[in-house]
Every structure is written in C-alpha cells, then in structure tokens.
Image (tube, rainbow, N blue to C red):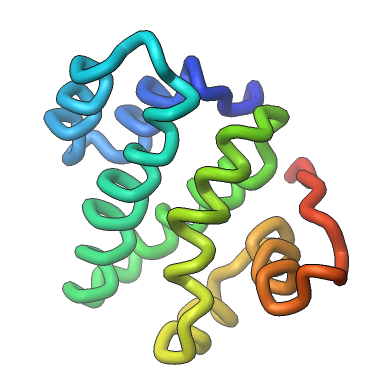
Amino acid sequence: MASVTSENLPAYLAERFPEARADIERIHGADPDTPALNAYTYMSEVVWSSGFELAITAGDELTIQRCFRVVEDLLASDDQNVRAAASIRVTQHLSVRKLRRLVAKHAGPNLRRDLTRLRDPNGPKMRPTRA
C-alpha cells in the first residue's frame, strides 16, 4: 500500500469507512484547497467520532479492529501532516485510562510508539514502521 498523504486521505478514509462518506465529502467540499488542514478534521470527525467512538460505544469488535488498522497506516505515513493529525486527534483520545485494555489488545507498533511518546516527550521519537 502506498503511504497515506494529505492529498489522498479522503479517498483512503472513504475506502476504509464507507459509512462516513457523507462526512468525508462534506469536509472535502468545505475547503478542498487545504488538504493539510483538513487532515485534522478528518481525524476528529471520521476516524475518531464516526469510527472509534461509535464502535467502542456499540462494542463492535470488527470496526474497532478496522479503526486500529487505520491508525497504524496513518501513523506510518510518510506525510508528517497525516502523522501529526492522527497523533493529536486520535492517539490522545486512545491514551485515556478507560481505554487501556482495548489499546493493549489492539494497538500496533506505531500506535504503541506514539503513546509512549505522549507519555514521555523526551522518549522515543515517532518514526513510521511498515507492516
């Protein structure tokens, strides 16, 4: 798989979260000329709210697994903007105590590294790894 970039993020998310297509189109249509800034909105509204939050609330294990795979891809991106948006808008939500068991069960190496970085800013730096 090619790296997710700010420019191909809407298509990537539409493929992974077809149920959120209307939100993806709305975000893209609101300001199609600023894909780097839109990355933060996609992370908040699509990956977190429409993805993780709904799946966790519903106990939907398959969607939870899909969300964790998406986060791994995003944190492995060659695009610093995508990695930063995922870290700020998704990893921080996943760092809360009440989600620790879920994260321990599903987190891949990129998310684990990002969580460690959040807990210890002087620790390991966020470097993408390829699956």
